[in-house]
Length: 483
Ligand code: C2O
Ligand code: CU
Image (cartoon, helix red, strand yellow):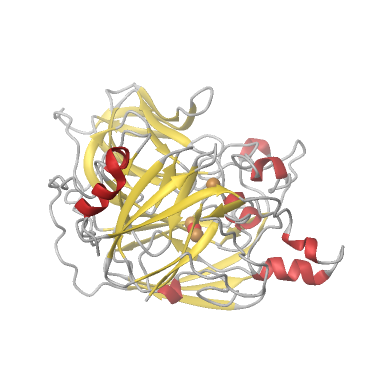
């Protein structure tokens, strides 16, 4: 295994420049205190029914469309503490198969909820029970992993909060789960998939919402410290999270505690989460959590300060406990490159091989959880790689317990939020963004950008894909085999 110095020598000055700031730079010491140990948590038995639901969502838009929800609740919230065990029985009352992927949770591979890869699909009328104990605190979510474009498009996603990261409680906590809806004028579903969207930045919703509603307002105490958990559950949209009218800090990224830094704007692609600490302003003042990416900043929530919490105290960021994620040994890490690109050549439609209208064609697409367009690729490989009824070969074979640095390279003109299952990685550098080092399970790779991530490999077969779901389902997905 060549040392880092040797690699740099081999690349010459340009390569060395591009790589500077990666493995070589020492990690700054964290000021976060370790969490106290947890002793024998409790068992939570959840019953999660996936079914159609009408009414009560995106109020003023009064949609007629049938939503697909867990337990008739938009973004069904589940709350546990670190050390607890989740036993969740999924009951499928939908007209098609589904499963639950626990996004961002480091769990045993057979609980990862990827149809055909880690478990058989849960067919209509069937059940499947997930059981695991989340090793990390934080803000997570869960969703189906097959046909997500339309299942998540119809609302099939829930929020999972793992508590246990607060040395001192906040004065209040708010969850903002953001997702748009593809609704037409008379409240009907518009197509979730479009060729134009899938081939570019994704298909956007027509109605924006937070927590399934068009506006979220809260009265909060003045001079208080509140925690806001923001989730981007949209299949497409990217936001620039910011706060207007109050002091705010980012305290966790994708659920993972970070040394607090002031929130100016924080970019969040599909599937990304951020926890922020806000010091609420004086009584009578209004402040907003905004998406500054939109042409006109769009309010995710509006807060009004009411009665003061108590005597005024100076504002200072509140720190969470240090994360529990194993850190890669950067000096000894193996480096691999993954290129996210448009599909090479005219791979057009993988169903072209079938006579028109052949039912086998649809079955084949379904069995691979793929859309019918091969538009995108990772390392020139598409999902499915060869159109056969089997898992394509892994993008790479890794060794359990070993440290890796991945270079994620985007050769397309669109940003891609890249997600890796079963791991929490450290974002070491991004060639086009000014970022602190932080932990994540999904990272934006900007057009023509190279992003370095590092992690310690855990055993299993883990998906690596873009979380713009139309990209994922049209080629930009693969898997890693860790043995
Ligand atoms: Cu949130 Cu593979 O997904
Ligand atoms: Cu993408």
